[in-house]
Image (cartoon, rainbow, N blue to C red; front, side, top):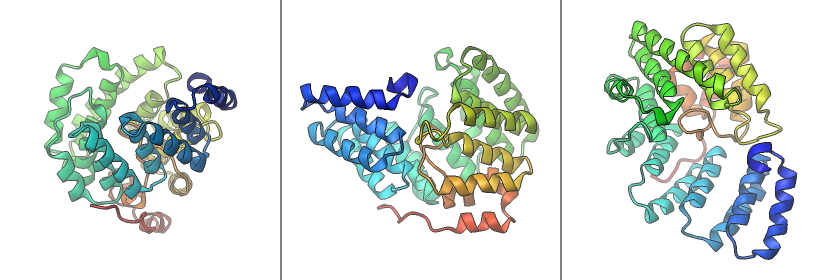
Length: 323
């Protein structure tokens, strides 16, 4: 009920019934933590996470998901503490280290992010870590080193990764664009668009695909298609249905509108996003936008001279994380 239909009331009812018979099962409070999070009941979700962790303190998935909740709430110091608990159980876990780096990016601490990412050598199937490395290069505006790595991976794309190869091509195009290689970026984005569109025919409800396509079309200068796709994604997964990922299409719209010369729409979307918790669209659907990311991310360059944008980008960051 929860995963497919987003029928949260029914899911909660069943989980609460199951609890009576399985009082020591961590899976039930864990499931309730996920359901209440989707409903935007963040404090209830937090108490379910704590209950589940008391019953199963070394459950890495549980600890990681609790960290994700803290990230979406921009409570970065608490997220880092959870991720360190994960690393105590599974040292050198690539995704966990990449997530710590993503938090450093969100706080605007690119040197700390770089130090965490430098030892990692993710493959294409580790897309979260790989995309975090690409985003780092883009935020630093030094993408020259990452471009050959992406090209190497995409010369022999793994069919098992499905549309993620097209997503990586989008990232390659973005890195090439930031490196001022406009012609190469257009070629990468054209290829990404054709790959992503063929997957969308088979998976018309796949919101991540729609988001990827919206950004790819924007890169190609097809403003109308990019805006239509971001509006389609907003209609398919409204915030009222899903507090966790419902805001993702609003971020896509903000990015598209910024590039499309529609500052009013972009600013309105950004004002909304900075006022709510959510899991962002880039690299593995976790990181929400922060003032620091607005200052660093090249996609928002067209808004830099707008006083409304400057105000958003200057708003105080959450308290600094423990190093």
